[in-house]
Image 1 (cartoon, helix red, strand yellow):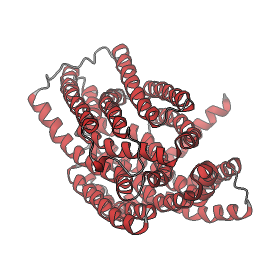
Image 2 (tube, rainbow, N blue to C red; image 1 turned 90 degrees about the horizontal axis):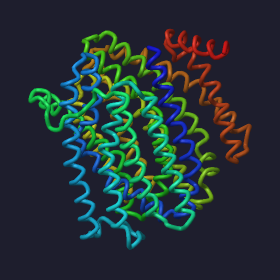
Image 3 (spheres, rainbow, N blue to C red; image 1 turned 180 degrees about the horizontal axis):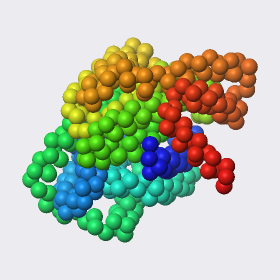
Length: 505
């Protein structure tokens, strides 16, 4: 694995680590200020209007792929023409999203407002529509920097905007402004991040100058052909990640959305970490596909799968063992008796999350190779199963049923159908995929998790510092097993060189 990818992964992890740490410290404060009902309203809005992401129509992934390829080939004019077409479309669709938010505010419908919501709930939706509209430009310009493999600069921009958001939240929540503070903070962060990314690109890469709606016919057609399948994947992803909160809000109450959402927040933190780890691999795979270096692309796919699966098994294994103590110490006081349901939700979701994370590298390789078309149907089937099963089980078992309705389809798909499909499309023997990418990390978990249960029985303290210490110590046996069973020899050598350099310094 190249030094550039190692550096990019470290930058991504650092930026995301800061966000997760601050978010972790902030969440009990936010829930305490808003209560379960107030925080549940915010989560419902995010789930409801978060579906505007699908109007991206897969263009963000296309920007990442084609900018990386045009850069590798030195085709600056084609890149600028293609970017101009993408951002011209974003301008139109952002206006449509704002109109939808305005209509929701002016003509509120009963299905838009969960039980127990504030009378100003539709105003919050309007403000969040502004945040959703600005998100297109934020992520679009971020993708340009990612395609140029400048994750370091992008992370600085993202961290600055994030910290401004956090400051805004703390100041105005402390003054009693409630849910409106959260939606305004989202709007502020998106606009600020977009402006900073645009300014950085103008300074660092002056050759990148999008020419509005000027893409060549064949490039626009290729962009559309690629993006439409990514769009279908995006629709499916939105159904999968947003559906449980919507179903709970419709069937139960806003407070129940919070009970599910707190557990899902931990899941999202782990997924963000693995996505940050995976992002540089996708960019490099796109460049390799652009130069027709298929052997290198397949090798990178297997090594990326190995590393991300190792992260998945380690993180979800530790949380599965200590998650009950962790949630109780973290937000137990704020959620009261509902914490027991959140704990059960977390334990149900974690195995599905591990399976989901293990497929990230395969999805990136399929996108990079433009072989992701049939993947859309597979993921859409999974999403519809989550929606249908989720409604049935939520009516029967409440928030725990929503977790089961989410986890069962994901496990069935990721462990069997999707992994087989990916290997076939990439020309990788399935036995080789299992041996190099999956077996070592899974064996690390099998050997380590029983030791963690032993530690839990011996060390019964459950305050937050003790729980963090227990989880930190759990990394040691995982690291030892992963070093011998999971890591590729080349990566062991590279890590040995990095650690040796740190010691010499």
